[in-house]
Image (tube, rainbow, N blue to C red; front, side, top):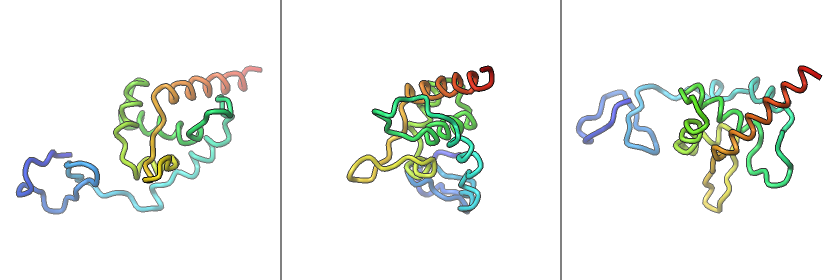
Length: 131
């Protein structure tokens, strides 16, 4: 990606990202390729380690967000949190986050929520493998 310094220096054939002044040099994938039905269905089969009370985000949304952040290069929970803070609204919508305000703004899971879910799922998977 290239940072735009002035509107006269735009690259022909490139499109502007919606929420920043960065030029995207690649096209967004087709609608069929954006969805991950296999991954989401498999993650939905995992038991949620959190208590029912106080859940703001679904287990699948939190785990998909962590997976996308790791695929984007995040190597720590802090980096995953930074990736989720900077994720655009359309990405959060595709990951399954619901609007939480009258204006339709989606809020991603906090880094502590991502950490608690990841650790809880790891413990549940380990207990299921070794009864």
